Length: 355
Image 1: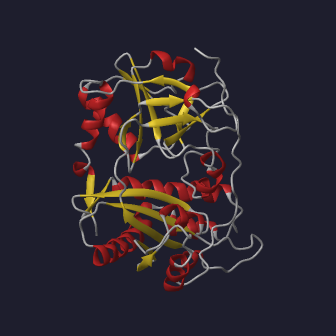
Image 2: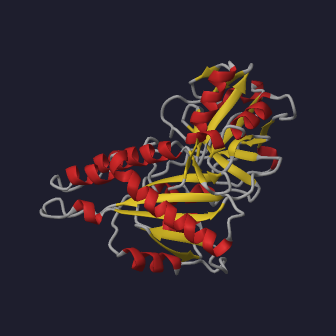
């Protein structure tokens, strides 16, 4: 086995205040018009505070062109009539708002109002429901109801001058949503590579992370599905957009702390408990990859996705075939294939009807 070399690029957080700053329909119009030259048609929908319009933006462009805020990515099921783990998404988004507000310089007179309006699930849920429902209805009106959908929700707020007073934090908060067809699942071989360090605050799903990870994504080959983030000591905590699991001697190993508690991760762990599959809440170590029987990543769009090939590239270079560290056999009867099927079969059961 080659000597292990980890890319030690440290990602610095992109910091700015999350500001709504526009009315609902003018915001929809502005974001709808910021399409890249690669996007020829308005095949998506953006809604802001309940008002929806067609958009040519991808979900990534939507986040990058919007103010920073707390975001989450959900998926529909049941012919786009239901949302998978919607209650968890609402709760996690409210928790992300709370975590971000604790890190930002916010007028102390504003903070209680912002927390009450945006950081409690009961207050945030009706606004999320209204905006997501508007976006899904508009998508179906324009494109029919044959697709399952990827639903990206963003919550932003205004950061007033910490020395100022008298602002209305509730009116400055905004809920926006991007809807597009859910992409097909990746086909085998699924390839991942180890590149980059863990996020500073994994508990908060901050949209600025989309910009922070861009330098790493720029080095990815087109056939690489995901980046795995490693600590200085070689612990693999999670992917840039996924949770990560190593399968060792019939048990599932995954980090218990320092990761975002993804909705599919939660379902996979519940399935393991029900099926009597052992779980070890400890980060897998890259140096042990040679003895893993398999590995998976999980996310809203991928569900539980077995990894076929793991690469460890040189720092600052795209990976090539010489960087292949290990290959996994994920055929019928493997634990990875079993977990993939078990999670897939539970999606509709763990869903909520769209309001």
